[in-house]
Each structure stands twice: as C-alpha cells, then as structure tokens.
Image (cartoon, rainbow, N blue to C red):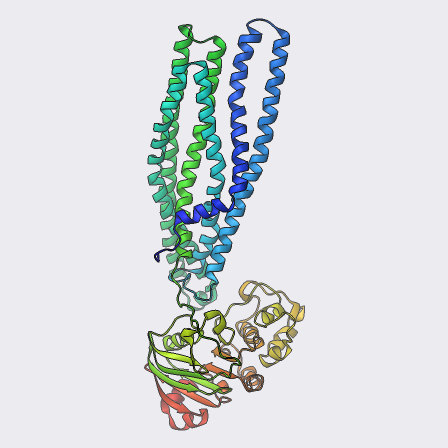
Length: 565
C-alpha cells in the first residue's frame, strides 16, 4: 500500500463522518430507548412498594399509566432509530461502492492489478456491505453503553454495593470481549479473501465457458473451482467456529456477572438493606443487562469483520496507479502521427516505428505477448520500461490518460458488450447520444446483425452479448469503436470470428470510413492487411520487415507463413 494511502481505519472513519448527523440522531434515540428499557423494572419495583404493598388502586392505576407511557416512548424511539440506523448503513455501503467504482474506472488504472474481476465484484458488494454495517454499530454501541451507565446509576440509587459492582465489573468485561474478538477478526479477513477469490475464479470460468467446453477442459475447470471453493469453505468454517467461540465466551462471562448482581441483591434484601420492590427492580435490571451485553457482543463481532472488510477496500482504493498523469498540453487539433523510439516492454525490445498521420497501417506479429504489450503501451495502460511513444510530437507519458483516450482508442479483440440494446452498445463509444452511428453500423456489417434480430437495433442483448454469435459480437464491438470517431484508432484482430465474405466487405468499408484518420490494425488477416497502406512485421520483439501487403507476400516467406496459413 503506498505511503499516505487510505487504510481500513480511514475507510471506516470516512464512512462514519459522512453519516455523523444521522448517527447522532440515531444514537440519541437509541439512548432514549435503552433509558426507557431501564425504567421498566424500576417502575415495576415502585408499583410493588407503593401500590401492591399498600393496596392503593389509585396509585396502581397512576403507575400503570406511567408504565404505558414508558413503553410508548420506548417503541417509538426504537422504530425511528432503527430506520435511521439501517438507512445510514445502506447509504455508507452505497458511498463505498461508488468510491470503489470510481477507483476501478480511473483512467490511470492499477486497481485491477493481480485481481480477478469477480474478486473486485466481491469487494464492491460483500466487503462494502460489511464495512457499511459498521456505521450502524455506532448507534447500537452508544445505546448499549448508555443502558449500562443508566443501569449502574439506577442500581447505585437502590444500593451502593450493587451500583459499584456494575461500574467496576463492566470495564473488565468489555476489555475481555475485545481481546476475545482478535482471532475472529483475523479469521474473518482470511474468510473474505478466500470467498472473493472463489467468486473471481467462478466468474472467470463462466466468462470462458465456451472456450472451456470447446477444449474439452470441463474436468480441469471443475477441479480448479472445487479446490478454490473448498479453501473458501474451510476458511468460512474456521471463522464460524471463531465467532461461535467468541459469542459463547462473552455470553458465559456475562451470565456470571449477572448472576453475581442477582446474588448480591438477594443478600442485601435478606439483610433488609433494600426493599422487596428494590430487589425486584435489581433482578429485573440484572436480567435486562443481558440485552446490552449481547448487543455489545454483536457490535464487537461485526466491527471485527467490518475492519477486515475495510482493509480489503482500502487495498483497492490505495492501489498504485499503473500510469501517472502528465502535465503536457494535448495536441490540438490531433493530426494522428505516431512515433515509437526504442520502446521496450515485456516481449517488445527496442522498437523504432513511424506511423504517418491519416495512414492505415497493419502490424503483424506471431507473438500474442508482443501484440498485447504494444496495445497496452498505445492505450497507456502501462508505460514502456524504455523508450518513448509520441503523438504528434508529444510523449504519451506526458499526457493525462483521460485526455489521451479521447485521442487514441485501442479496441481489443475480446471487447465485451453491455446488457443493453444493440444501438446503445454502439452509441456507448460515440461522443453524444445523438451521434449518427449508421455509417459505423454499415462499415462493420453490424447492420446485417441488426436485421437478423427481432427488434432490429433496439433488440436488448444478453450480458456480454452472449445472445449473439462470436462473429456478431465482433461486428457490434467494431461498430462501437468506429462510432467513437477517434483521431487514432487501434484495432486488434477485429474479424477473427467473421466469415471471409463479410470480412472482405468490412475491410473495404473500413478504409473508407477511416479515410484521413490514423488507423492501426494489429492482425494477421490477409483481407484487412490487403487494404492497408503499409504493413510492419514484428518478430522477436523488433521490426523485421516493412512494406505493402503485396510486397511482403511476394518477398517474405515468414510473412506468407504467418498471414496466409
């Protein structure tokens, strides 16, 4: 975690501060509720001493009305306080989800490093819920402590020894409860980590289900998930045992303490130090104290789990950015000239390359890692470890990632679609909701896809476009990239699942729709490469050939083997 980044404590304190007004109101209502709860055994004790013992019907009626009023205030405070408290928890969880979403979508990237998408989803749902629940613990904890304090004062008025017993006994019990919760906190964090990883693996397997089936790797996939799920189950069971042990130990300590209060009260009544009504009130208060102690046990256990979740949230929020924004002024207007000088990253080893503004350039490589590294550099998802990439003479590393992506769009071949209409999916890449996307639909042959759907372009697609075939998804994703109308467009294998006739039609239309703007095709498709102005071949991380598609097919055997077979 970077220095100065948020910690679990910062996450929880921020969530509480954001709801402080509502929490103050809920805490006051909770205290009033608990105060009324304390009043119930005290009023019953008074009824016994002043009405039952004397046989006064008027006194009995008066105190019964007072008792009814106490119950009315008690129930009203509980209902309103619970509504405010639960609402504050939901609001806090919602704010944490927004913070996580903002960090994950930050153009600088980095939040998803070494984390599966399902794991991030688990953090944004389960962990955000648990951390938001900590906010609700503030009023509950305040109410429980108020109940203990009011009970101690009431017992002091009945008998100094009873009051002192409560006042002196509560702090050690609270301290012991906190110490007992330490193993629960540690095991809860492990449980949440394993559960998040299991969710990530499950989401990963579901997303690649067709590939898994196509490879006949169902048994390996099931074995992988079974192993991950068993680890998650074992961690959950350890956390459950720890929670049960924690609650059992605290309940046992509380029971001993309450029994001690009852015994001391009975001894004082036998000696005549307190009245029968006082004894009834003292025993009622002792029984009532079980509620606040159980509430504090709940608060302590949930707070332990909330701290563990808050630390996981803080890890995502404090994840170092993959790239840092620069202070250079973006070129205006953008011509689209791309220059690479000595670029090295992963499989790339000192690439020197000039791409003219407005050109249609093909890049061919047999190494998927080299293609991926190049795409990451052009999209500025990461910066090269050596060398520089320039846009119109301005280094990409000196530009803000958000500004850069308004000028350069890198469209991966496995781009997902949204659970929305086909038209909304295409317009997601456009500058405005009123942009005319018909040219993009035509150029990508996605208009043919729309004609085959029941509601045309208004047909709602399934999650990730799974209601479409692979080729149809690629055409819609290509239409989305074209509709964005970026000055520089980088396409990675946009037609691998498209039939050859449609691919040739797309190739011809692609050149027309992108005329005058820089387009880079990272592909081995001969149909697409045939319409390019120039093809650059990367081999072993460096540029090994440069020319037109026809020239390279005629003169370069390696190129022919890569592209034509």
